[in-house]
Amino acid sequence: MSLGLHSATASADGTVIGYRTIGTGSGLVILHGAMESASSHTELAAELSDSHTVYLPDRRGRGLSGPHRTNHDIRTEVEDLAAMRAATGAADVLGVSSGAIVALEAALRLPEVHRMAIFEPPLIIGDSLSTGFVARYREELARGDLASALVTGMKGAQMGPAIFAHVPRPLLRALTVAAMRREDRTLGPSEVTMRALAPTLNYDFMLADQMRDRLDAYSSITAEVLLLDGQSSPAYLRTAINALAAVLPRAHRITFPGLGHGATGNARFGGKPAVVAGPLKEFFSD
Image 1: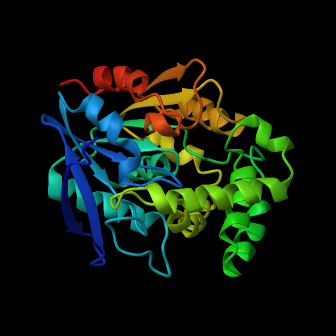
Image 2: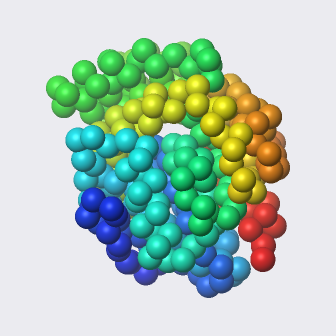
């Protein structure tokens, strides 16, 4: 699978935001989620490439893009998307997971965003998700135990197969160490490993906490919105989509039967890009 042409632009603070381009047609930016990079949605981009020019940025701290800054927050992420929009002219956005939080905020701050698709943003509604695990993740990250930090993040965010909830932590850590070593050997130079992505989880957790109980603000979004979720995804993510469906004035909702939080990603990581591409093509059709 081709990763497309490599380009870059500069955000408001001068940080380089690298991105890849696939296809021809109207512009669409795909903002990946946590533990992902620009390469995570190349198969979905290929599915859309006959009707859209798809732009796949690496969000800060990953791949082609520059590092996070010390005062990183949602405003920085929106500035990065604004730079992408200015460089490419794209007016449509697909936000996945934490990237969907960025897309929602961009719809409030950037009138140039015309349409957006939102896939399972980790918006915390009331007590829908406890974030007490984040302190443990940060402590393990600080001491350099990336495998333990990843296990803590995965369990806390309720990611991975349901069976993982019953697997002892030492075994999960050992499996994670083995997976990181395998990736170090096998992933191509344009792909970003779990080892490199582990520290970026900190900023995605920060975004989720910053946007906690911000639902009412989104009622003023005037852009047309497609809400997407998987029937098998964690309950707190579906709670967020349900809540958005109730407040967004121009929202449409599609739930994918049998799919989970990885539905938009490449097939080898459990995604179903051909399934997801169908409603996206229809929604973003000119």
